[in-house]
Length: 443
Image: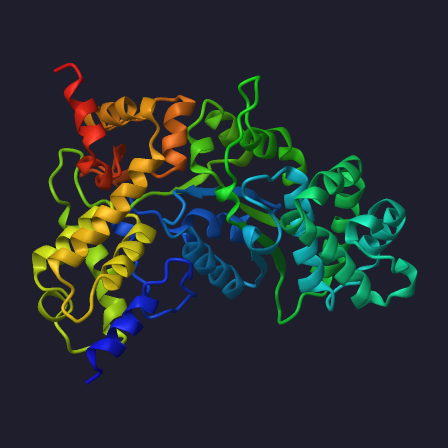
């Protein structure tokens, strides 16, 4: 039997919230039935697979809800249906979430298509575009190398260096945009030439091409004096260019934009954007929703079973069923929060089982993070949503959505009618400022 200290170390790493699950991972839990029957393979995959023209779709949801894991499942589904997929997490190497614009996304798509398909198609259209701009761009690559002196691999590496500087070097970010922005139309033309040749020579029997740009939902909203924001500029003002690549496209989108006054415009432009809701742990009336609770419990159980297949979750891993339940319910059905709470509880544990005290310490620590997140004028907004279970179409509420202080749920009733409702994150309910705000609400 694995000793407790080694087991605690293994469990700590098993609950890493920054590692999306790969398709086929044995710890994956299918939560479709407690997320309102959403299935990314049906909702996005079939429209790509069946369409006789290129599609461009948006996929949203709370940050950390499990979108990356679902998008990797979509990638596997599409590749099983002869569609080659270029997937990338945009914030890892390409964009800075706190300062991102449309041109950053275009350059990221260009770099990943070029690097993934350089053996499939002739990259000369893109390299010729770069060569024609080289006098303007060479300083931004921080090099004195002559572009013409490099082989194809070296030229592609230089392009990657320029796009990488968008994320890594704030001082160069504005300059890169300033020099590339006037030429985005010609860049898209060159990229489509490359894409179209690549589609004629796709490997391993693939017949179509798709790009999935993940983590764009992490772009922080920046509001301007005219009331508009950078999310609208990227996904609405530049929609024609976002859609212009000659392949199937899936972009993640901030959930706050999907609940803005421009939501109808998004539906007109991108068909019907899909949203991954939370796992429902409570009914709107406040009762525990047993199917949702069992799914959240299964998320923990499957990760534990990798290292302790014979140990009882409710008596040997946790000190009681009540302790396990308290941790699960405080996640709000948000997978990332669940994993963070588990890691935090393990940090407070010197030996198994995980105690009620360790879980309470983890909850208190997470609750304090939310206390610091909420601004003074937002407590009343949270109290109103806790009572009404509805979110108003106002940027103040959208900010709380983006910060995961407000969570969205959905379910189908017995007549197959879809119901959407919202609630505050359960960690907030124990905060004194929130409780005081609730007392001020009219009866």
